[in-house]
Image (cartoon, rainbow over all chains, first blue to last red; front, side):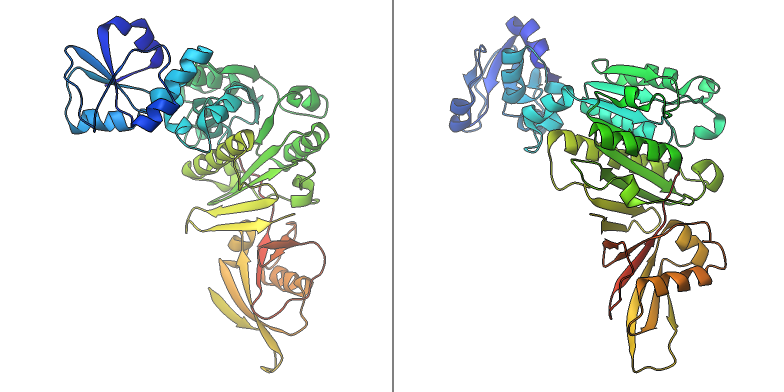
Length: 322
Length: 93
């Protein structure tokens, strides 16, 4: 069983708190405002009633409870790291404990995600999985941009929508479904297609734009304003079993115009050429991963590189474009 | 993978591996092609050859060329053992 820092604060009188961390960790990261007893050499002290075990990240204690089949015992989700942040900032980070435990993310990285603002252009095969993953990762503000409606042939690859949504506006349905995933993210729906008259005003102020469109003209438009506004563009494209991803226009790094100057044709769209739903799921998630890495500052990333993924052989190709 | 020899002589040849992506893969029916080319051949020569083999299927497709996983903009002379990728833009999403 787990308990969040907020729940523990609300119900503090019901529990005895046991700190299972080694001495040096306890001394370095004391549990501010939380009375606790200490376990010696991994042996839990005998305490009556319900207990909350605390380790540094909330992972060791979850394992202890399962392994030892402990009754009436909770693990503090996110551990001392999440508790400390809750006491200092009054913000409960425990739902992200499995990503804040990563040294590359930590609480500081999570704060960057919570303060970030991402635009997703196109709520189709790439946009749906990208939006789901970005939202659950804790992105603070998301702009969903699409003027299209849901059609029956979208459903196999656009998991936010179901048969009852056919003919409904994609941004309306997507906002409703995504809000359930993370009510704390502010979702702006923009029920239009990008064009030369609206692109700048829609993208300005965002930190990253996810190119989840299905045509080259819109990609070129995003590229133009991404470059002008200095907003990184995370490009994704599909052809049958193959997908491409790149991060474009980061402080003068290559853009779509350098990636594909003057493209004559992009091949058929997913509607025309066909695609299995898993492929946009994979590529949209790689776009979301690259956006998160970009916001947090994790390297290496796909700036100046084109990733090509083949869904048949599962081979990848990484091409330097800079 | 298929292997082709496009040289009359076996003396002045180099071995090139071509990696095909998206429309190129479907037009040629192969992921990879091994070619023997005359020394001095360039990326332009190879692209012309690829387009000919595609029988018109790549006529309206612009191709980016990478040699050994690095984009090349201009005509570039190839050398023995080079791996050449032909990458079209894709628009599905």
